Amino acid sequence: MGQIKVKGTMQRVAMFDEDRVIGHVMHYSTLGEDEIVSYAAQTAHIPESTLLASTLAIREAIAFFVLNGHHVDLGKFGIFGIRSKQKAATDAEEVDPDLVKHLTVGFKPSVEIKQAINALHIEIEV
Amino acid sequence: MGTGQVNISYKKRRIAYDDSEKLVGQAVRYSTIPYASVISYAAQAANVSEASIVLSMEALFDAMDYFVLNGHMVKIPNLGTFYLSVRMKSAATKEEFIANFYKNFRNLTIRFLPAPELKAKIAKTAINTMVE
Image 1 (tube, rainbow over the protein chains, first blue to last red):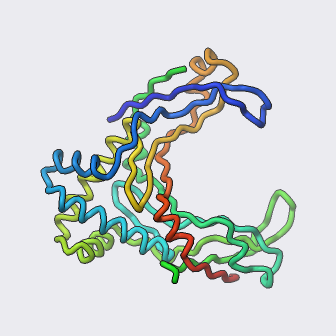
Image 2: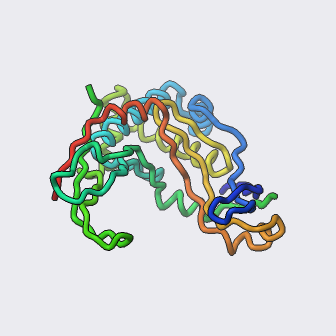
């Protein structure tokens, strides 16, 4: 389906205390919502206004459900959910919201996307 | 006022590295909202038919997959940025990097970086803790 380039660049690696070659996926550009909507409108023959209204509603739905402790299944795209990082407590009295250090929204790609990723053609560059 | 509420549940678990038992927290997941329910909710919120939302989502997901799986980053305002990331072992030299590429390769995955607007909503989310 797709083709990506993995580039190896020399970088400092702290655990080895030396410079080593690290692989990164090369990102050609950052596409915004307008470009994605425009592309989707052309390929699927859907009015851009409908697509924009849909993305807005889906974005709001994701934020609303995820920030209230639910996971949101977006079918062949993936699942959004809340993720947290917190310190462990030695006893129940110590348990407090202040132990929560980090709260974020995570995304897990669907099986279909994972299969597409596994089928990618990888070009290597150094 | 917060935008949501998240419960963190603490459960006694074995901590291997210091050979002890501690209360370890995890965000409580109430349910997984199925795709059909998300579509229905979005259709009502946007005042658009469910069929239009389904077609729009399919087209948008196809477009996002296409661009992300071809090395582009996709930034959706108020939601976040999707991009492809590789996990692999490092190599001592460029020659070794090329020669052992598939041996050192672990996996490729799509990463999601929440947008500042979403991070601001997360920061306003109320956190409750409970012990099981």
